[in-house]
Length: 401
Image (cartoon, rainbow, N blue to C red; front, side, top):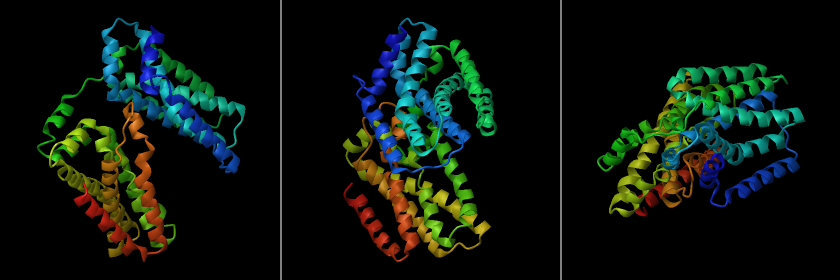
């Protein structure tokens, strides 16, 4: 039973013949070998490696477990007779293998290539991955008692920060991992099942009435998008403090480029195939959707930029008209490029939402914004040229979509 359940979920995540797995492992090997032969070395403390691997693995595992795309498979599986413990551990094991092999594996390859490590630390990093998988699943099982899970996660993060450099710390992770296994031992398959919320159903029925209402209700149904926006606002508050010690006003465009990293709001069509089909095939929906969508992303970007400028004014007191113009330019440029990319090159073929959230295409626009920020910082004369290019992109958005 356990083998059949694991095989069913594995075929969904890795492909019918597990064809995704060799490609992913090949990319990991290429990344490791490329960085290793380049001789690029960074001194990374042991507790930093533990923290990076643990938080990244736990975050991806949480996204995989909470993905609504698993609801269909879970519904079918739970309708059949099943053994509770075998079902839970096969489900968690497959999602954990997906998390470690497809996501954390790349980070693991980079850390091995650019930092010095010994066999004990290597085994410790592998233990960190396994520990993060089981702990994330256990905390998810305890989500009704969110304060307990939050306190547990905070204690582990504090232990990593203060004790992560000690060799015996890995024994602590092992004990904590066994405790997480005990929690999963009493779990049931229904603990990982999510019903479609009525609020989401309301969103789908009302999106034809008001796009703006749809945008904001979509955010309210995806709390992680709101969390990402709140994090960007916090970054906007603290960036001026770090930039004030750098090379004057030339770093301001870099700040605006950093604040364009709010990528979850830029994949609205990719993550909602039903909406994409409706927009593409219903008459007159292209411009009616894309223009408000561009304005929505622009306002989200401008909110972070305004916080950044206000923080800069409070700390340095030197906000100029040019800085405001740069903020408008970068916010609008990011919005226009995001909509054009989402319209012409949407992300398809993803298995669960975690694949979508970590797709490399999401970072095309932020990389372009960093390049533009570097160009503007080094030569302000390029700003009028970039404004002309932005005008051309807006024309494309208005007349070609």
